[in-house]
Image 1 (cartoon, rainbow over the protein chains, first blue to last red):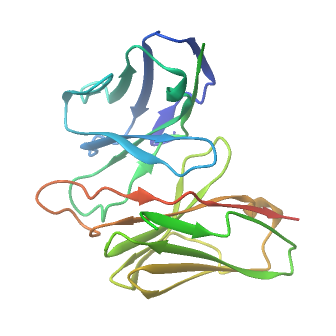
Image 2 (image 1 turned 90 degrees about the horizontal axis):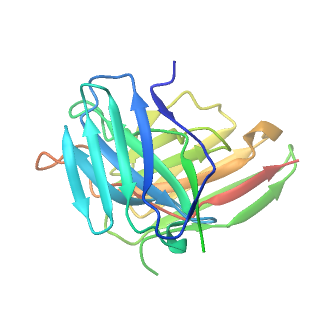
Length: 113
Length: 118
């Protein structure tokens, strides 16, 4: 079993739709959760960063962590064509991890006009 | 130049060639990383350097040889690669390697070098 599972997509939605991207994980020691966005021909860039369980909102983006279910989500409201990218979830343990991130495979999102 | 830069952006090499990938960070960070990104696979951490010392070698074959001459530069020397080594090679940096202030250090990625081994 992979440590982090993420549906690779591709996911295609119309402009303005609400997008839900998800990851599940098996290591209960993970406590820091991140979402990276990677545009074509670019490196990943950090989009959202949450610690432990709960929600965090930043503009049109909401990151949600449910540690009891080992499940994290990224919601995008009012999706725009500029949101078309691959979204990678990443997570790490709080101590002794040496900043080692465990990534999902990424979900490719296309927002169509 | 700002952020993390990588050269070359694209590289085609034969299995007997020797080439080097270069990464430079302009952020004043102390930690640098090499990752391999293959299609439909998670990013694989290859090497980690902190203050120019290698602190992690993630079971990477010896045909990949990293070098960190200073905290701003990181190289990945390649020799006798295999076709399965074709991938996007990403460099990243972070302020420090370990957590500070209770928060995980954010890693900043370069654009990557797209490598094709023939």
